[in-house]
Amino acid sequence: MPTVVLMDASLSMTRPVSQEQCTEELQRKHLAVAGLTMLFEHMANNYKLEFTSLVAFSSLWELLVPFTRDYSTLQEALSNLEDYDKTCLESALHGISNVVQQEWGHACPTQVVLVTDGSLGIGKGSLRHSLQTLKGRPEDKKFPLPFPFPAKLFIMCIANADELQMTDTMHNLEQLLQLNGGDGQIFTMEGQLCLKSVQSMFGRLIDAAYSPFPAVLRCGNLASDVQVFPRPEPVFLDEEIDPMPRHILTDLEIVGFIEIGDISSPPVMSRHLVLPIAVNKEVDDVGPGTTEEPEEETSANQQAGKVPNFCVLLHGSLKVEGMVALVQLGPEWYGMLYSQADSKKKSNLMMSLFEPGPEPLPWLGKVSQLGPISDAAENPYGEDDSKSPFPLQPKIKRSYAQNVTVWIKASGLQTDVQKILRNARKLPEKTQTFYKELNRLRKAALAFGFWELLKGVAELLERECTLLPDTAHPDAAFQLSHAAKQLKLASTGDSQYAAFDQNINPMHTDFSGGGAGM
Image (cartoon, rainbow, N blue to C red; front, side):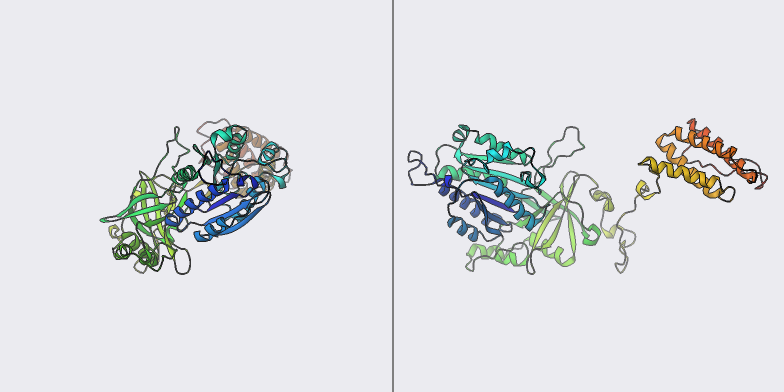
């Protein structure tokens, strides 16, 4: 999950912290830099594979560092940050929206960390003015929130709550959060404005958004301590009357392996990086990781690289064999582990979470009913892997795979009725086509409970019978009368005549050979 840091570089950030609150000569900008330095150091140690970008803004915005994993570059740009003019947050939000979409598109979840002193700006372009003019804007000047991609917005205020409550700043920031769907949080400093309080505030951000998820990955008698990044979010099921949050277990049990071709590209809820704990350069070369370690390694790291690690073994095996591992996340909740190439030389062990349920991928059937190939009477893949048991064929033919009559507009119904009448005027040559179209309309009317339609078409057929010319074949009158009678009987709803699977068959006459019948 990439992160965009939006740093306020307006003049208000250069306001000094009063001597009563801090023993050092500090500006609010210095406190913000100290807090972000703490965040970058944490991410460098724990989120090595995540991408982070740095954007500065005042009346204009500037992309200081595009998405990178090099946190020394981010730190250097932060240290060289210049001071600019007034605050204009709306243009900056437009800017990061463009930056994220150009790099990641519309589907990648992103975390936006806004660092500001709480000054909203003055006049046109201020946050206060932007929120007051939300309504009535033309399409090309709409407010940038909500973002066109999934995003969490974290607002880091270099001010305490009492200072923000003196004006309408807190109310406006809360409104900003609500415009983004309420997904995020506002953090304020507690007590005095000093390095200790800003570190405490960014520590709360790290706990909320950047803390790893420790787990144990198991497969039979093998196990490995791992960390999952980012931390999986609780899931709420819409179909539940009183939905409760569902969390993944800290014990992740691999229940089986399957070919990549069989699982294809399944729909997933989220994707996460899985790293073995205490990996070093030797481990990274084999499996997860893209950040190079320093050339000088401690003896502890050298020793750790020689310890066998199941997570590294699993990653290498999945990569070589072209398979994925099905992992159980909780009761009737599954996901998959797979190798994903990060570059030409590096790849990562990833985990994707499926929708909770016993059958998250319909073409595989119920996960609990999958078993090893050795249990099958014969190899389902064939002796030469020339076939596959997937996708499973549904026991019931789906309605969308059948020729179903649907009338969305009146013109569609009119067309079907006219088709019947055209064939009626060409009887007996079009007898088979006439009854085919008649039965198609009859089934649709019965399915919709459209009894009036059956009665109306019956009356039309009776009228056609009276309008037959003297030169018409005698069989035409018999067939029209017979069809009209059967439609009228079906329009009563009587189960004897209105059975859905029953068809109206042509009437056998002396002209066609045989007696009358259904």
